Length: 214
Image 1 (tube, rainbow, N blue to C red):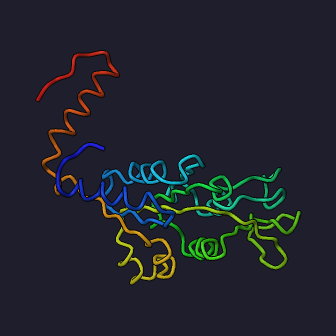
Image 2 (image 1 turned 60 degrees about the horizontal axis):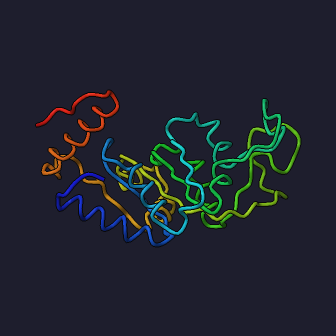
């Protein structure tokens, strides 16, 4: 963390406060404001620090694969599923799951995330059958309990997305237990010289050069 501006000091106070709990966190702010850095600070500064921090970018994985990535799949669940595979929720059991770009998650999958949060359990894709299937069949599956703290992040305005029918209101409230708004650089101009010096020193160290001064 580099900064001494009032906006940044307020952010650090919020990070310290929420780190002590296991509450779900929703981090919002423009691209490049450091949302992932804050997510890591919350995890490693809290009671789950020794457990895994698992990250998934919801915008970087095709919709048809995202459910399997999150919840895992059983062998034979779909073409190419030659063995059982743990999803990100199971990998993060006891720790934290960082859902980056949550605003890009498809609506159908939002409902499944909501159910997982409510029931604290997951059902891998195809977990109730060895036949090849394209979707989960709830029926007689046996949910697997998981204990996961969720930190979500987005550069989108989720309130507007809710009004447009692109994001579930109930999921928003489940994620937005503790909101953190990342200040943009134009809101913390006092930090620009500190940041310039920080990156100059880091670059000089990596390249074996004498750092430039400003």
